[in-house]
Length: 117
Image 1 (cartoon, rainbow, N blue to C red):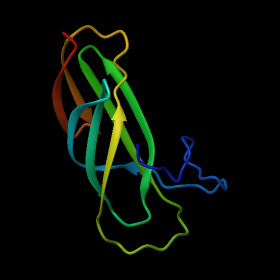
Image 2 (spheres, rainbow, N blue to C red; image 1 turned 135 degrees about the horizontal axis):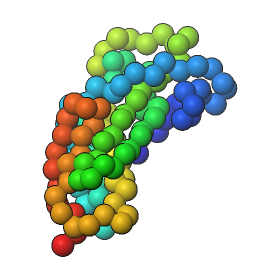
Image 3 (tube, helix red, strand yellow; image 1 turned 180 degrees about the vertical axis):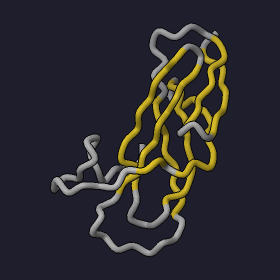
Image 4 (cartoon, rainbow, N blue to C red; image 1 turned 120 degrees about the vertical axis):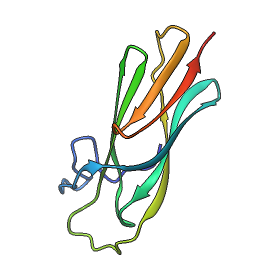
């Protein structure tokens, strides 16, 4: 996964608040790497200072719902230019039956993949 400037509580190492907004997602694909399934997400940060701050994954039936949030320190001044990112998210497949699954990121981009069998 990409390095994060903020902890899960929305604060960085110094305790300063980070702004959390949904990541801009361009695409999502599922790849098998070393026997594990990863959702590989590409998109754009609004500036060079923004980073992934939180990843939340929920499995409901045959659907993986991933919320990908970004954050940056408010006091930083950054050029407002789109900066591409790629992040690999390990899919939590333990206990799932073989079959077709859908991965949706930020209720925006989705893909399907076959697990097991």
